[in-house]
Structure formats: structure tokens, C-alpha cells
Length: 422
Image 1 (spheres, rainbow, N blue to C red):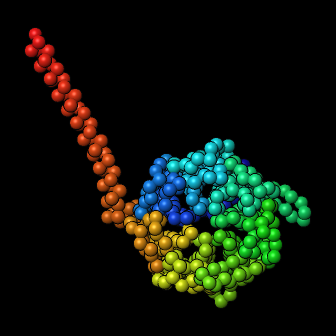
Image 2 (image 1 turned 60 degrees about the vertical axis):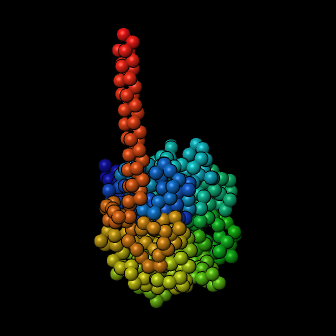
Image 3 (image 1 turned 90 degrees about the horizontal axis):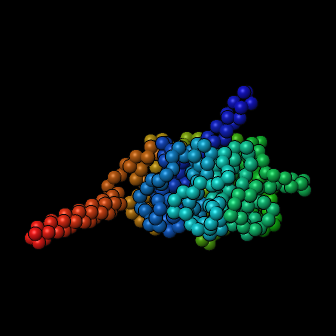
């Protein structure tokens, strides 16, 4: 009984540790409200909004069929959610089997992953998916040209395969993991002992200095202390230690013409203590102990929320992001939740991914149309969708009435003819 209680406690702790409520991909955003419902806005060409259509949305729409969700995550063009029972649901693009379904067709509605459960979190790379189970094992499927699946091969897989690790020349199953992070072609895994392991692409030293171009097995990242949190961008890795320090390695692109490379894990000095980190594809974010957000990296679309398009090679505080409890990064977007439950976002917006009712690019944070309770706070942004929905139903009713009236008229005419014939 004691063992069972400890196991449940460990599972609860792990779930809390890795849970996230806002995330963004390549032109779409995901929100998990406090009721366990999922909302999505933005690009939907592959069905990544999960509403059984391929129509973009400039306001967050609730993903139907998902209840009691505890974790959400985005891939580049696909989306994921895990419910409280540990089942994983995936939808959107499926060109390399990243959804783990029987076919490689895109999915316009959430599909439950078969033959697997007990998941605590999942991460989406470019065209692959990585997921962590409550027993500390890591599974991956989809694209594998750059060894993203970490299973010792470079063969794509349409079903989950176990990630393997190598240590002292011995290959075994990766275990003891409490959180994972993936965006592009590489993945980091944080073990319960505070060690960080990585696999996949290494073209920019995002895994190891002067190493191979890719690694087919997970290996331990050297040169960092005991780590509390991990995050990754397309070509860089970020870690937060227990002292509140940020470590970074790989490529940092603060501007189009400026490349700052961290060939090995490097501690960023002269900063306050931080409590949470996140990455977009090309930028990084962090919340300090005063719940203020700092950002650095690319900024050509305003995703740092500083009111300009100037990239930063070192973290700078974002004045308009205060009282922040949660952060997430997209391809060219940032998204955050403050202590009032307001969801704010900034960056590129061609598909409506900012969820503010238009397609205007925002260089400073703007409030989304719903809050963390799943309540629509800007109902005036929804008239087009609601009007469209009303019009569609109205037309159905009108057509039905016309059909009924036509039927009644024909019956009356038939009775008259029958009466006259007698």
C-alpha cells in the first residue's frame, strides 16, 4: 500500500512538473483552460486546430471531443493533448506518421494513440513526436532522418519506438526521465537525478561541441550542474539549474546577419534568479523570481514583445510581461498567462495564431480572446464565426420549412384533384 501511495505521489509530482497550459507551433496556438478543455487558433491547413476543418481561425476555438485534459503540446504542424487517464491524443499533419495512426493521412480531429497509455507529457518536433510515460520511459515516432527517434536507427516509424541511451559504450533503454523538450530535430530529456540527456541533430552544437551531425542514441550532456528544467529551440538548448541560473548551448540568431554560437553549455551571468524557461523556434523566454519575463534571440516579427524587431543576443526584461505564471514559444510567437488569468501573446500573425481577432502582427503583448478559465473575454471578436454558424443553421431551417410547405401544398393540391375527379 505504501509503495502504491509513493508511486501515485511520484506520478502527481511529475505531472505537475511538466504540465503546460499555453503552447504554439508553426502558425497555430494551443491553450489548456482550467476546466481541462483545449482551445486552438491560427493555421489549420493540416487540421491542427482539431475542429474537423482546414479553415484558419483568428480567435481561439474549443477543440471538440477532448475532456479532462492535463497537458497540451504542439508540433510544427500537429497538436497533442494528454488526459487525466494518461491517454495521448494527436491531430494535424501526419506526413511521416507523427500521429501514430494506422494511416499517414492528416487528422482533422483528435485521434487517441492506440496500445499505449500512462503518458505524462509529449513534445512535437518538426515531423516527429516524443512522449514520456509515468514509468520514466521515453517513446518517439515519425520522421527520423536526423535520428530524432533516438532508437539506434534513421528509419522513420509510424508507431512508437522506445528511445535508447548509451553510457560507457553500453546501449540500454532510456529510463528515469521526468521531462522532455523537442522542437526541431533534437530532443533533451531531464532525468530525476538532474542529469540531461540528448539525441538527434547536432549541426549547431545543440547537443555536443565538435561532435557528430546527429546521434542515434541518447547520451548525457556534459558541463552542466544538476538541472531543474529544460527547453529547446530549433538549433539551441536551454537549461535552468536549481540555483536559478540559465545555461545555453547551440546556435543563437539574434539577427539575420549575426550568429552567436555557444559550442558548449554556458551559464548566462549577470541575471536575476529564474523559475521557468521556454523556447520558440528561434528565441528563448524565462520567468524570473519576481514573475517578470525576459527574452532573447530572433525578433524580426516582434515575438520578444519589446515593441520593435531588433534581436537580442542576451536576455532582456520585457516590461509589459509582468505577473506572469506560464510562458510558451512558437515558431515566431510568444504566449503567456498572467496572475489574473489573462492570456497575452505577441509576434507574427498571418494565420490568426495570436487569437486576437485579426491578422495584425503584434510587437507588444496583446490579450487573447479567451482567458485561462476558458471564458470568452472579447466576444466582439467572434461575430464572423457566430454569424457564419447562425447563417448556416438558418439556411438549413429555411430549406426545411420550404420543403415542408411544398409538401403540404402538394398534398392540398392532390386532395383537390381527387375531389374534383369524383
